[in-house]
Image (cartoon, rainbow, N blue to C red; front, side, top):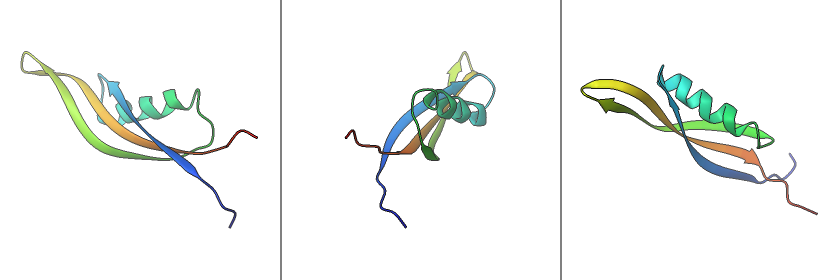
Length: 71
């Protein structure tokens, strides 16, 4: 197995639909500018509440991608 290095970042995705959609939004948005995404882990879920109603779902996600050093 070749040696590899991965960088881990933390993101928060939001959705008015669900936690799953919030996590998906975080990963897919990051995927537009980051290459070699590997693993996403949901570390925290919460909701925004206004006037006693849930108005948004939030998913805190750690995301790893392969580190490619500049030569």
